[in-house]
Image 1 (cartoon, rainbow, N blue to C red):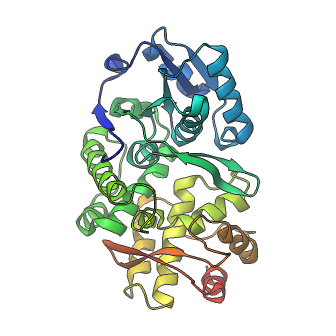
Image 2 (spheres, rainbow, N blue to C red):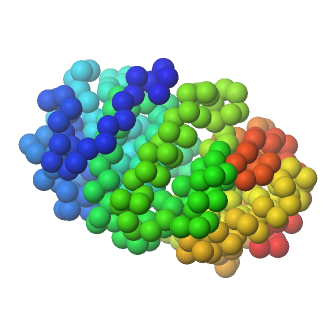
Length: 336
């Protein structure tokens, strides 16, 4: 990626650390440590409890202190070996330690491989919202090992599939149409070319707006304004990220149609696609629309509390829309 000097390398488990510096310090969640920790050899390892609950300010501070105690210097590298939580947490720690040390991303979930490991965003959650503390800190290397997906539970495959559908929705109508014919399955041979395509699509978008100054990169957040609000409202213990984004994409397509931005029929097409993939299509019970709106006001795209969304023109084309009226959003949420 331009400006980041980042190399994407596809690898096997046995060659995982082949290109890494000797002074690499690994951050890994407890599930990955149990299943694949042997692939890290004798490198120093900090095992973190699995789950979004670990992506906190305190946890990031703990990783930074561990790096200091382990003797990491300014030429050290931090390897984030895990899914999106580990990538965000370790990346934020790498950006903070000694004002920044090199980062290696090793995404081990489908979602991380196609999305969160690409593009240099790192961060942790605050009680007030998701990813509110963070930094742009691109990895020097992204090591993708598709064979690690063999141990991925079905729900995590579905979780990642939502982000793949998102790329089709915002950038690649041909990909979306192909997924309508053949939804994502737990077949690594079928999925690897799709992973490569999604990495390419995200890298191109990030290169065009690396630090989110033009609004172009914001299209990657389609489905996420509502999706993040759902996650926050459920205290990150309900729908998984991709599941929440599935619902978010449908509702944001409905919102776009309602305000005249999105081609009619798009929301129905996305809803059918998500149902065919096995992803949720409606808001979970018990969520108050007003609470979701409050969370959206804290979204990073919002300005002075005014809501902004990445909305489709049609399948394959998306743009940032600012100053979306709250009553329009409430109508969509209450109709779900």
